Image 1 (tube, helix red, strand yellow):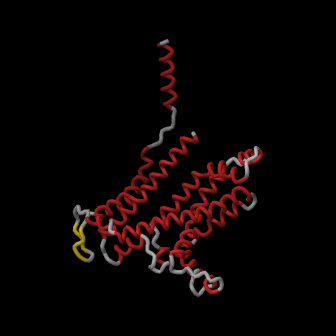
Image 2 (image 1 turned 30 degrees about the vertical axis):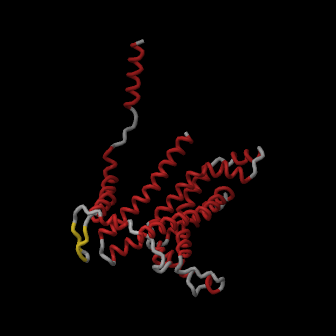
Length: 290
């Protein structure tokens, strides 16, 4: 018996010796890039946020948390609330617009599926700034939407909402389309054959199986929307500022790097909570799928 266990243990060691080993040195470029372009700037932001403003464009480094206390002022709390609410609303609108498009592409297109996917990706071939200015021309108070159709929303929060959905819609459609492409549509047909109504089959099968893609797409659009700078600046004319606009003003105009850094760190902390919720959700989905 002991001899048998010895032979099995020896065979196991031999099998393990043939398993592929990932050479650790290959991660060096990625780790250097991560350290230089993420950890380095983050450390600078933290150092700035703990510094003290001693004059215009003059700071004294130390450990002063007064900038973070200033972030909790009612004015900036309101801007944070506005930013997160607009990002959440924009994400919800993106889901309402993007999911039917992704569903139609995956379920009903065959010959022209790649062409439709290409048309979704075409806007990414142009500059984000150019796309926003093009939307400004469409929403112009003297354009055809305002004069012919009576839709004058320029320089309001509604123009910002339209800009958010327009610019970030492809980021949501792609992961949802990928989830729908991997789905086994015979499950829906089986549910229909067993008497399930189309809505119930969609809710209990299609939506549940593609929910990870929906959550991933929603997070992909929510995070950049929360840090948006260009869209509120151009489409609201400065009348509806996000946190990103306030941070830009602190660094560019006020030359108050400590407070701008404290706002940046606070926004990162707020968004980290949503990322943590996503990781928790993804972990549960993985266990359920297993």
